[in-house]
Amino acid sequence: MKLIGSKTEREFRNNLIVSSNQHFSEDSNSPLKCFLQSKNIPYKNAHILNEITDESTTHYSILISGSSVLSVEIDKSNSRNSTIQSNSELKSYLLGLSKIEQIKLFVAKELSGM
Image (cartoon, rainbow, N blue to C red; front, side):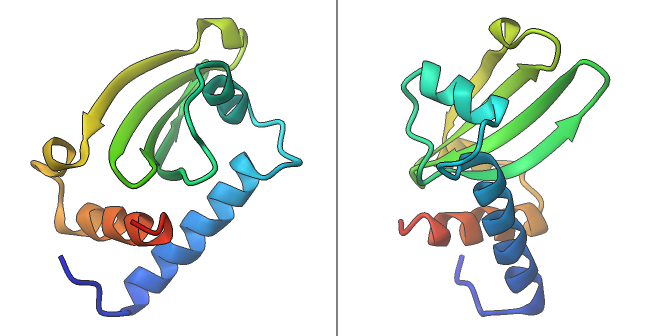
């Protein structure tokens, strides 16, 4: 997919940058960052594609190094109960994604420098 610099792409880019800074900056104590560090997963080039919060957990879909998408569940009450739900190669993750989610993924990949 070729990005064209549309308004939608710019909005995704801005939101992805803000989210990454919030969770992965050096000053951040984000439970997500701490979890990824504990699993030795590189997060400095990571971008959060989706974040869904419920009463007890937060679910994240994260583009890691522009090559795979990690699905993580962070337990709000006890981070030791946090888990990796899945790790998908980009090619398989793309299957069945809506056009708008594909755009978000490709913007995140571009931000990753990949």
